[in-house]
Image (tube, rainbow, N blue to C red; front, side):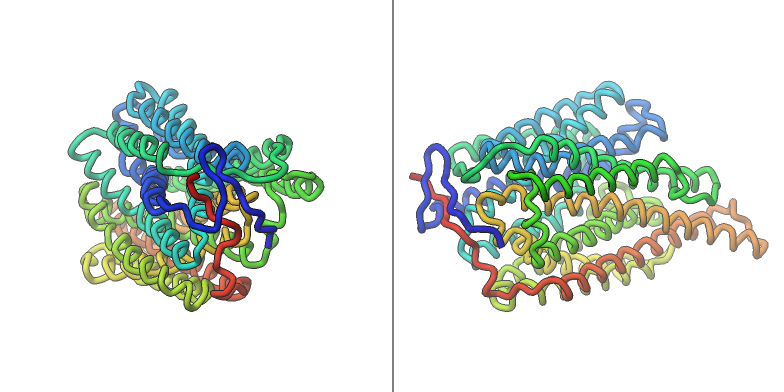
Length: 514
């Protein structure tokens, strides 16, 4: 564990033993912007067909609507976390929220693909400031074990259920308004959050040495961006090959493999540098702690399985069951319901039984939910499989995210709160990129195998019914492997995490206004 050095609220604050009196109001404000970042991932995905048609974006280029965001967001997270620690978490939060709003406005008025891609990259950059600053603020605001568990229950509910809400909101806005509102909807939320945060959220920053590790920032930013881009290309190439009728895997793309390899080398160089740097961007003590390391590895595996699950489930609803976007969004809400139920229960249980049992239970429940979804057929009814599968998935995610978020930050100390928060976000983002590439490749492989088998047995691969069945084979294969990833996450939690309920009370003094 790192040294729990007390922190000081810069400006109009000081440190004391009493908790900050308006911490629950501050939680409400921070929750708004956490939801903003989570929603953005899925709300834009729903609008992709409308965006590409309106702006004339080619099929080959449309991936950049998503990739431009994930590259800057994932690549800049660790630097964003350190900026929050050293420059001030509230200040970083305000700049991140304000910048995210401006970037969203630019995306909404985009007249061509270049302007849209630039806006998305800008959103990712400001999101990389906003996300770790938000989580770090929660860490320093809530120092009582039971209160922190409740605060992280809110965070866990948003992290686990926000994606499903994004599908619903994206569907409503795309169908009844305009795709541009999928960007503009961020503006009022960000403005309200910024205006409310100025008087309500206290400032805090890391004590001691606050000099920036510029070489480390360059290495890890380039490394993560290259790594994420490589896996994104694998997923994209797999889908393009399948659309062209090719059986070739995306893993044969030399450029994608080169980017992944370069990313691994740069991140390895970053680790070596950090071990030798006096004031590193990412102190290795953060990730080498057994409990936090276990939490980060679990977060990577959960991120890998979760994003793929939502992506393929949305495709199933719209392309197989022929749901309109708004109906597909409504059909995704059982996940949110499950998260809300389990996140509340987890906040009460984590201080009684500790994080490990809940994380293992959560991983098993979420895997079970995805396993249920792996039995979906072309004519499956919503209530027979999709509803119970999603409900189980949501219950599992709530039980996983609440203790995971808490454990990943416990013991990090006030000096490293932003960096520890950034690592949690970065592991989820890297996991999502790896998972999307892996699941897309497996899905495409299953589709190709099914079509090949049909042709070999004298069937007609051009028959629309055969094509639809092949799609379902691809989706259910992805659900099966996503379940395996979440089950592996539960196993990692069981083996690596040793923290008990006694380890959960937060270290350091609370921040309160003076």
